[in-house]
Length: 78
Image (cartoon, rainbow, N blue to C red; front, side, top):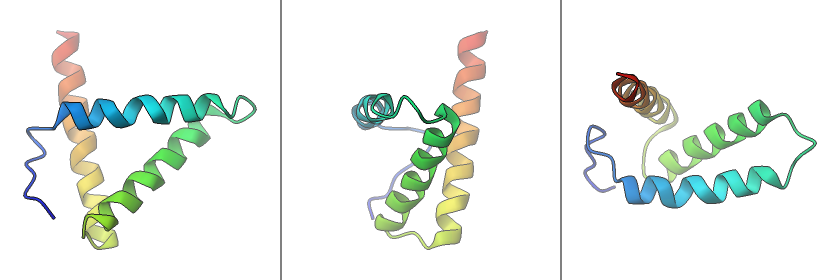
């Protein structure tokens, strides 16, 4: 697994994945958006495990990522 500092996200990789996930969600207009978001979270957990994390570490990584997103959104709101 590459050494990745979550404080310095690779925004090109982030944006490369966000678009296809949003387009995929559009293919399910009869589903609740929150359910699709939950599916994306489970997929994120799957990818973290693919990167070599054990299930519990993957969840902790997801919490760290959520904290980072919150900080970024709060900074934008200023």
